[in-house]
Length: 429
Image (cartoon, one colour):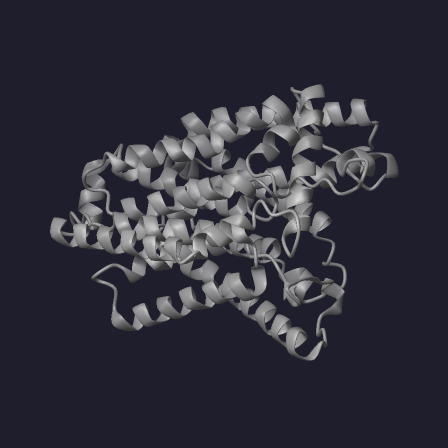
């Protein structure tokens, strides 16, 4: 579908936003650009202007109008949520406005859904944009891998300004926000019959590299579970003849049985409850964090912890607890209640809940070709909710992108099935 208004500025901005969110400005140590807080504020101000233009520009408005019924409700709630917490942060904690903005500006990333949906209207939908995002995500992961390998083998850190955390004697680093989405997308494409062999080889290389990164660099157990289970969902839900499907299910069951009875799965799961050894500190910290923040939410159920900057000493003891070891990072979706109270639950329901609802709708569409992919992505974020909050700054972009994919596909296949059948040639892979 050709649009009258060029999507290029929106595409370029999304790519630049992804570069910033991935961490390139910090990685490259560019003077004046390393402060990601101020950089994010600047980018989100531009995102706000572009989102407003989606209402002002008549051509863009007509293109996105089918999405506005729900997005208007969501943005209204987001504004009320932000203003309520902003006022609460000023009154309850007597913080400066700049401090509140610094800790809360990342929520403005929800405005990117307008930009994603508009760019998806290009020929190729989100497939084309995913290819561009891959050229941002994987080179970054490669640089981090090289840095870690050199540090682990020689003890020399080529980028000391990044700081470092170690586990098992190896340098540890997180994964970019879009890594999980890209991994599942390429795994899904790898399973498709019409994928060219040269592309399958590329996808296989990317998948193996991601698996290596998870094991050697990331070393986060919940990511391992989320990647494995969501890939298994895609594998099992791929459309096949019934006899082949039965065989594949049996193979998956046998594989899981072998892993379980060999002791690998029980030993892996036991690390989440051990209170000594390599993972003991993580378990104790998580238990303490849950006790502390549940107490905070009990005392402040509407707002939770709220917009709180830990830079001031008295605020630091509130944000991290009296012992200074309470962290929201590893509490999963409970983070949103502990952090933002009942208002946070509403934000989860209107975004993640909406995405799950749309995926369920798509599963009822007979001609929708990507049921396995959407189920895998839903399973991925569902797994993360156990221990890693999808709404954290390091994962929010991936959630928003996936939600945008669900909105786009639902509009095309659930509400305009004839158009979808025409554009896909009736393909129901």
